[in-house]
Length: 72
Figure (cartoon, rainbow, N blue to C red):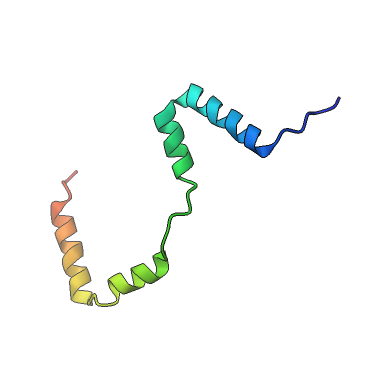
């Protein structure tokens, strides 16, 4: 049994078409988006965002969040 070796471009095109047929274009796009590398430096951006926060700021945010959460 000889398997035909296809180019990765062709494999990707076939896989994409199958996903679109089975899931639709929206869910196929959502599926592929989860593999994007994004941009920027998350660690540095996060560090800059939180370095000026105090414990009081954090506690206030938690309290505010708890007040807005509906009771079960």
